[in-house]
Amino acid sequence: MTDPIAKLSFWGVRGSTPTVDPATWRYGGNTPCLELIAPDGTQFILDCGTGLRVLGSRWAAPSGGKAPETHILVTHYHWDHIQGISFFSPLYGENNEFHFYSFRSRFLGRDSLKQVFEAQMALPYFPVDMSAMNAKRKFKEMDGGDSFKVGENKITARWLNHPQGCLGFRIETPAGTVAYATDNEPGDPKLDEGLRKLAAGADIFINDAQFTPEQLKTTRKGWGHSSWLEGAKVARQTGAKTLVLFHHDPDSTDRMVDSLLRQAREEFDSVFAASEGMVITLGARDDRVQAHMPGTRTALRREAQFHAKVCGVTEGGKDFEEETMVRDISLQGALISLKHLPRLQSELQVTMEAPGMDGVQAMHLRGYVVRIDAGPEKGHVAVGVVFTD
Ligand SMILES: [Zn+2]
Ligand SMILES: [Zn+2]
Image 1 (cartoon, protein in one colour):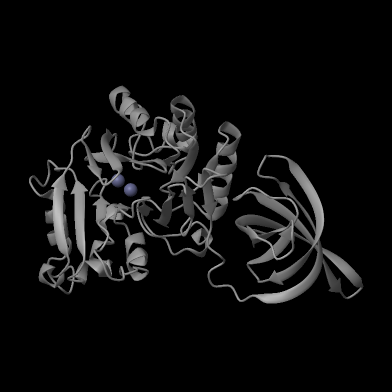
Image 2 (spheres, rainbow, N blue to C red; image 1 turned 30 degrees about the horizontal axis):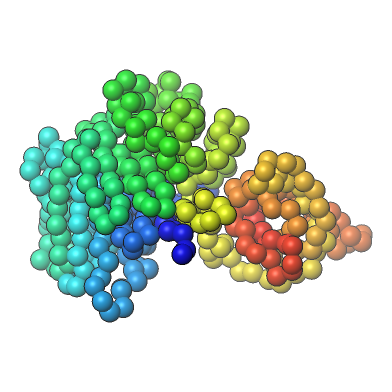
C-alpha cells in the first residue's frame, strides 16, 4: 500500500498588490493563490489573487470519468485575494463545477462572494459580463468556527484579526494538515487563540509575514498584518512543524525576503519563504514534508566547465565546503553538482575559476539555492542557484 500524499502548490505569494519589479522576481509578484490536492484527488484552491490566472492556464482537464471536485476557499474580499477571478479561464468552461466558500460581509450582506463576482464583472470594469461564465458555481457561507468535510478531508474556518474581517482555514487530509493564516495582525487575545487552534500541530503553517517585527510595533501597527517573528512564536507554541512566510510586502525585494527568512530560521527550525512555483509534498514516507522550487524560468543557459569552490549550509544546519565543476551557467544562476545536500533557500558562496587576461582568475559569487534534484552522478545532487551578487 502506498502512503497518501498531498501536494501544495504556491501560485501567488505577494500581498496587497501584484509586483513586476525585477527585484521581486525570485519570490514572485502574483497575489495570493494556493492549490492543495488531497490524497483522494479533491482539489482545494485558497484565495483568488492573480496567481489564480496562472493556475487556470495550467489547468489539466480531467480525462474521462467524473471531474474531481474543486473547492475554492476565499479568506476575504480585499483586492489582492479576489482579483484573479475574472481571469481564471476554467470558470468559462461549461463542464467545470466550482464550490466557493467565504463569509457574509456586513458591507455586502447575503451572497457576499456572489456579489463580489458580479461587481468585478460589471460594465465598464470588465468587457464581458457574468453570462459568459459558463461553469457551474455554488456558493456557501462560512463563519469562524464552522467546519465541514469533503471526501476524507476536514476543513475548519477561524476568524483572524484584519480590517473588515478575514477567515483562516485549516485543511486536514490523511497525508497531513495545512493551516492557512494570511492577513492577520496579532494582539487580539480571542483571535490569537483562534490562530493557535488553526495552527495546532499542523504540518504546514502558512502565516502572514508582510512586515518586519519593528514595523509591526511602529509604522505598520493596525494595518492588519504580521511578521516572521509572530509566525515563529505561534509555530513553537502550537507544535506546527513547518512555517511558511507568506503575503510578502510589495516593497520587499528578494534580498529583503532572504533576510527575513534568515532571521526566522534562527528562531524556528523549519521555515520556508513562500515562493511562486514552490510545491510542498506532504506524507511521503521518508520525508514527511518535501519542498521543490521551479527551475529558473527565463534564463538563457549555457553549458560550461568551471572549477569551483562552494561553501554553504547543509540540510542539517552544518557548514560545508567542497570543490566541484560548474557545468551549466546563465547570467542569473548555475546548476552545480554537489556531494553535500545544501538547505533549500540557503546561501552558497561560489568561487569559480575563470580564464582572465593574466591567467586564471577567481570569480566570487553569492548564490541562493532555489532547487535541488538528484544529480547525474551517483552520490551527488544537482543544485540550482540564483546569483544574488
Ligand atoms: Zn492580502
Ligand atoms: Zn487584506
